[in-house]
Length: 458
Image 1 (tube, rainbow, N blue to C red):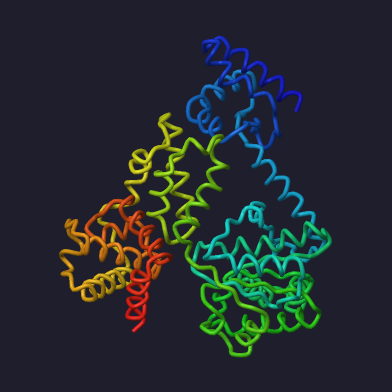
Image 2 (image 1 turned 180 degrees about the horizontal axis):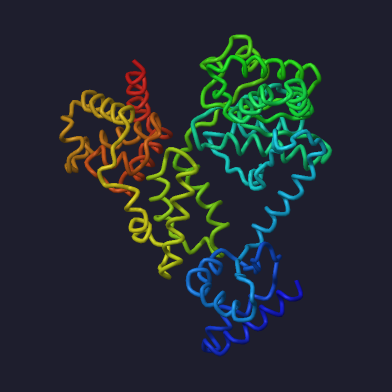
């Protein structure tokens, strides 16, 4: 490490000759702490993501060119953030949690993702129930056993499951928390039955590993479908762990009743409690963006509300896509030193949001259903409902249609605007607020909306 600091000093001295004092001070003065030297790389600690990105884009080649003037080895500088260091240290600690070693390259240790904690989970109407029950399971294992979390891809099921594991380990490091995917379980099972190995020995290691769990976390249990041998083996494991008061937590893309697996295993999954994680609404998506933003830039307040609304409206399906869009937008603004505005959000994301982006058939059908029903209810032609007329009765009917699309089917503001004559985000949001207020204070508005909701159910 001492040699690495000497090299850093030499490189910085030469950089002083290459750049004006003000530019050198702003860019390189804070490069003074080394995290580690690993496999020919010197990891320098950088305070925030903005500085890390800027230095990597603009100065990294220069730094490494100078570095290799002072060493015969092909070394390079790399940069690491304080929160990345915390993750690395947490991973090291996670490895030390595992006191059981049955793997011998056959069954690998499962490590929880360090960022998947309760503190980092943003709650809203779509996931609050699942979050609440997850906390109860973490605080009181076996209160619900098994704990079954289901929902579509990318909505936070794995995050919640691993958060339970982290919480339990935080309170008792000796707890043996094992995480696996159903796919990995199947692979481990077949390896244990491999004819090229001593069958008894391999099966023993498989049983020892999984039956050693105090808490077993299994992702994507639906993968067991049509794999009868693996299902039977998982059933035996389930019986063993539950009989010994060990907690089992599984995730799936569907509720237990819809799994294509043996009935007796399906039945076991209903013993405890099932919770679903639904698609986040606009408010929750925006809250997730703000939480993520705090990890990407030093001052999240620099990002306009319109830009966040735009991203939240266009990436509705899952949290992964939502956060990916935010990273793309931030990286674009950092690279070109642009402000975090709505216009720059639109420009940075235009290649992944096509103007004629096809709407799902279900969403499109629901929109048509609402438009036709509202048109018939208020005796207004659909072409007027989606047209430019500002007549009071048409504006009111249009606002009711917007409100129903949002509250009944949770369609994004941008898409609602497209369905109703390409209206902008602000107009749609105003219509929703107007009808929401009417529902509280105007009996006629409340009656109209409730009548239409009843008709939509028929």
